[in-house]
Image 1 (cartoon, rainbow, N blue to C red):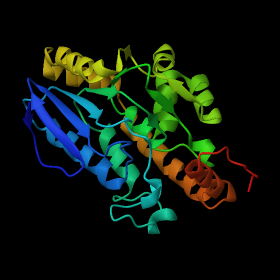
Image 2 (cartoon, rainbow, N blue to C red; image 1 turned 60 degrees about the horizontal axis):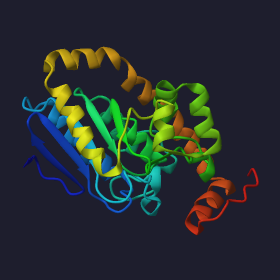
Image 3 (tube, rainbow, N blue to C red; image 1 turned 120 degrees about the vertical axis):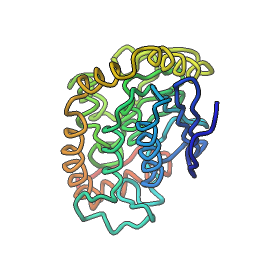
Length: 269
């Protein structure tokens, strides 16, 4: 593979019409505005690269993406780690605007989910069209365990993928689902041994790349018609709810309990 472009927190390699975008913030690959913006930049650059026909989104380290970096303001941090945007509406510089950019890209994406995909990390795992995973992976929408509302467009992407009932189960309980359970409920598509996740994802992307690229992109556009617009509208609402709930005692307790690895004691305030 040949390196493609220069980035701080991701690597991009392109070979035989398949690009691998690797998140490089091990071991847990916590995200912030800058990381999501870099992935969106890479996706858009590869959209314009004729040699690229399919993408693989992968990560090094223990987790695929264990969620937001709360030390930098979590879902409310801007590119400089400032928290001034806690109470302002979604803007061009906000994290969720970058998430919408991910949804607007044109080429098929295969996710290599080898470890935990938690909270906003689950939202990132919903960006690919298809997901390869393993028994050791964990899929978790842990927002209510933190005391606030799902984000990263999950209120649209998750029920669309696994149905409202399964999405409600994930949202309301904050339960973790193993890789085999994820495949059973349609959250992931292929189950392999952990050390085979990336290679299998690359093989699937290579199979897609053997098909006519214009036909694939046209079909993908039909399959995902309106999805990015629905995610954009959803993130406006998600951010408003997260901003409101972020001011509550329960949110403070949820974040503290997560840091202390204990069950939170919520009071409904």
